[in-house]
Image 1 (cartoon, rainbow, N blue to C red):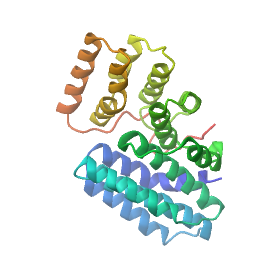
Image 2 (cartoon, rainbow, N blue to C red; image 1 turned 90 degrees about the horizontal axis):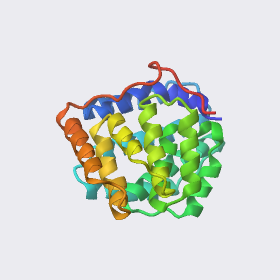
Image 3 (cartoon, one colour; image 1 turned 135 degrees about the horizontal axis):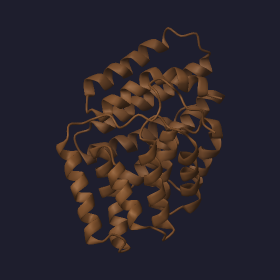
Length: 260
């Protein structure tokens, strides 16, 4: 129902995320400003405009969150976002977009800031987003929540999504990281899968994700050997010493994948 809006947003969303990977606040802000200005020049219905504004608002939140000076500031932003979106009312298309953004943000906040979201709230948001409108960002952060909450059902749905949908960036890494998280929850993890995850890890933010979200669980369950830990530390050092770079593109620039 909102894929035509996603297609329109791609002209701003793709350069926005490229700038995030490059740690370029100026370019992120420029993409956000361009999207905001473009909204005033398009012939969309009120419902469509509300949906687009909801996503542009989410882009603004992501910009503030990513470039916040500390973890405490990021957590405060996450709490404030939960309150602000809970007060909004929307039409059908805007409701789908807002549910998708809200689920993404709430799962993000749960996994990274320990700001809990109950399973029932996840179910409610998830049901509001038609299957064809579930994007890779939502499914990615849903997998983070599923891992933190040890929810096999949603983890399996996330893995199925990444197996079937050719997302725009780093599809191999995205699939492998969900595969690893699922294997940990199912007690099926193999060392080769961790090593493959490290090999595919494209950016230092992904090393930070692994260290914060996955590594403590591996240690708690005695699932990571010293040699495997050494392999991760070597990869982390390479990523930290390299200049920021956009992860490998898995689709031509400007191409939007269809969900299912």
